[in-house]
Length: 243
Image 1 (cartoon, rainbow, N blue to C red):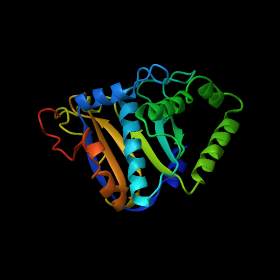
Image 2: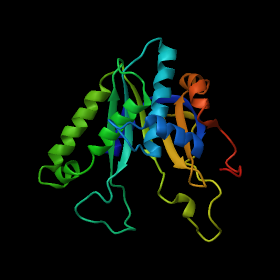
Image 3: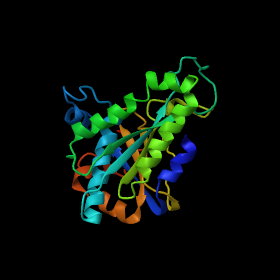
Image 4: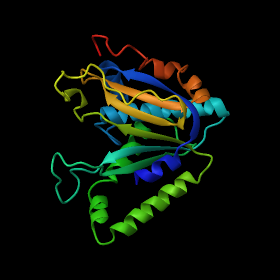
C-alpha cells in the first residue's frame, strides 16, 4: 500500500517548516472541532490535521484564484485491529491509507472536515480489516487501490498526505545516554515529494509539532496566513522550557 503513496504526491523543489501547536491552541481547536451531531470528541491529531487541511486549501485558493477539490490522506496503523494478535516487539509495517475528500463547494468549517476525516479513519476498522484478512482480501485491496487511483486521476484536486508519530513513545527511547531532548524526522529541502505533513508530539507530550513540506510558493502563502499563525508557532526553538 505504501509503495503507491509517493505516486500520489507532487515532486519538485520544496521547503519544510515546523508549525508547533501548544496545548492551549490544541484545546481551542478541539473545542471548535467538536460537534454533538458529527464528532463530539475529536482527538488532538484529528483537530490539528483538519485545521492544517483548511489552511492548505485556503493557501491553494489564494495561489490559484479559486477553490479546488482537495483530498487528505492519513497513514493508519492496523496493529491491534487484526484478528490475529502480533507480538508487541514484532518488526515491520502494517499500515493503510485512509482518505477523505472535500469538494470545492463544501464550507471549510473545522467541524465538517473533522467529520470527513473521522469517517475515513473509521472505515479502516472492524469489517474493513476483517475483509482484508479473509479469502477475498486481495480483491478488497485491489478495489481500494483502484478507488484511490480514481481520486488521484482528478488532476484538479489538491492532495495533502499526513503521517502521525504521536503517542508512540518516541521521547521515552533511551539507548543508554538518556532520553532525547528533541526528536524530528528531519527537515526536507530540495527536489523531493511535496504536500507532506508529519505530526509528532512535543517533548512534554502536550503539544504537536507539524513538519509541513510544500512547494516553495505554496509555503510562502501558507506561512503568511494569520489563521495558522494564530494557533501555531513557526519554527520555535525545540529547547524552550514549555516544549
